[in-house]
Length: 365
Ligand code: GN1
Ligand code: MG
Image (cartoon, rainbow, N blue to C red; front, top):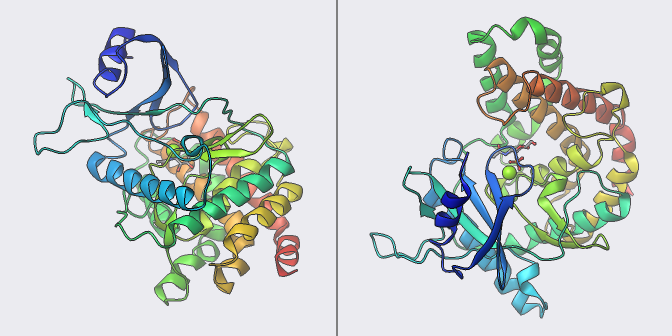
């Protein structure tokens, strides 16, 4: 899509050495395009921001700057060493903007937006993790939320209603109503399954309306491959901060388990191999509660098993709506990709639901 020359031109609009050795694709996100930029002295991550999904790039980057600055200060206060490995560090553009601000993004000649951050050396991502790594990840996400509890600067809702299941169900209904590419008939059984559980799964929205459940600053995309680990499985840094926004803590808890406790990847077509791993659930929950218990309300803790089910369900609803809509949101590699993802997630949801009682028992100890 972008030539090497274009990518080099874009990268050098940031305040870094002009001596670029190599630029290559990085990661497997479904939304933005990511590249590794290697220079003589340092490496960077260059990202093309998907402006269809993030139309307010200024708000997006402002949120990320506020969050990373706050976390950086907390790490300094706590005497943490090697801070650049523990929090993302965005590079400013060389030129100031027309209103005199030093921005952390640039606009290319086609009107596309880009940002650049330091590459964290020695980091690896995983799509499948063991219980030990999950415990570390739980602790890291609990710590991430705990550090942001006293953030004073505003964080805007960069994608309104992002993790609002009622809204996602309404989007699915609209897709079903329109059926723009005639795919509904292929997935009617999944639609029926969604309808059976829709009412039950929107309980968090009702608790919020009644003032019983708070929103906090959450990461909102805690899938396993958004965590950088070192080679010993310790968490270096939580990445992909696009969706940091006010949400129920269920977002961070649920989305990690949606990916980590699934015995297969979210787009694996071998549905018969799907199970919800209780060993991962237990390890992650222990890690998470270790760092988050101090600020969580009982209603948040009690509903963690619900959160573990909710995120497979909500992701199933989102993939299903995108399939019916003709794949307009998620990147896909083949025509049935979103259908496979939707079926995978709904299978995981049913497996997690079977284990709800066991999850509740574990939490109550
Ligand atoms: C998207 O870009 P990526 O892969 O980190 C999506 C998440 C989904 C995820 C499913 C902004 O995240 O909400 O859980 O795909 N991000 C957005 O794999 O919609
Ligand atoms: Mg993301």
